[in-house]
Amino acid sequence: MMTTKLKIFTKKDCPNCPLAKKIGKKLEGQGANIEWFDLDEEIGLTEGVYFDVMATPTLILTDENDNELLAWRGEVPPIETLQKELKL
Image 1: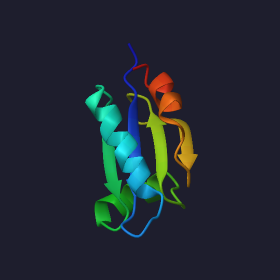
Image 2: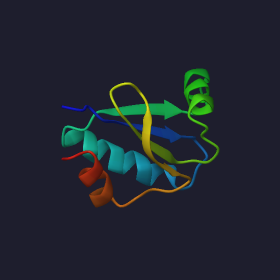
Image 3: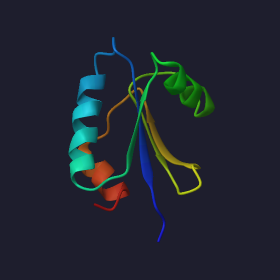
Image 4: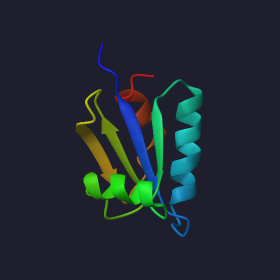
């Protein structure tokens, strides 16, 4: 079974990031594997550079080998779309 992970990249001053965080927390509560990255911190920025994150929020769906499967850069997709992709 493939294990997908959702990486959520945010910044403190991002107007749409609170929505991304809210959806992420809800998905986490439904059993999704979520990794959080704050682009204001060095570790978040390093991961953001690796995944070519140029806008916030960015949500990236990865496989078990950390390969990018799908990405939403600078936007928050509907929670239903994420639930479908995460198979929740």
